[in-house]
Image (cartoon, rainbow, N blue to C red; front, side, top):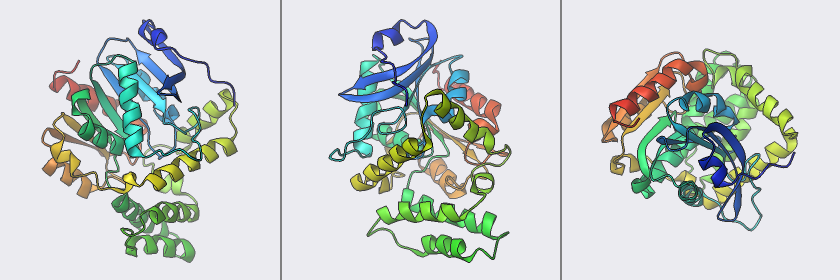
Length: 329
């Protein structure tokens, strides 16, 4: 991989609306950070999912959001262009949250808007709970608030949407059925490896599981282009993603049920959910309606897990409207 240029906070302060990117030192750990829009406007921290993908997946939306807001996006620690995790290093959700809070201080942002996709939505919920004083609003894009529940809805989606049309693929069907039947409370880490193994059986999962109205290549082409730009091999990117997941599994706090935190979180909260998403399903939307004190739900009817790609204008307008309604502009 090419050397990532260093990015000093002063360069961000002086950017005058010009996008910036590079490696920022946050408490001795290297984070690859991108910024878009004019520094000094209300800030959005945009969190990618995975765990372990990259902010590559949200760059186009970050640019669109920067028409009105200052947007900060980054590869989570241990992922792609950010620093690699050491073998002896603890890194769970709590460490992740404190790193985000340290980045806020480094960038001299009094409070910011959090926007998280999938696993990033779990981070938004936990961060808002731990640091309410730092949050203007909490925005969720198809979040996973309780991993042990999410793996079961994903497995059920495999059965309903894939194996219903491929009933002869018995090994994959059995793997999905086993996930639904297993009680993971005693060994929650097993749920991660079980769902990853189950995904290997779903040969066209990119089409049937996580996309609804666009070709999946529109998503994966983003990564191919970025990997070519940074001269990154698929092997080294995948290895860092796996290490990131292993560290989160070791720490264990990603397996907590973060849904009850929604009741305590007092920031204005928006849930953007794709009708066909296998992660954030109607049960989760209803939980949010019932328990988020200042919550609003927007369901995008022609989307699955990535509505910012599938219905980008509706997604963007939902955010702009919500923030305007709450006086954040």
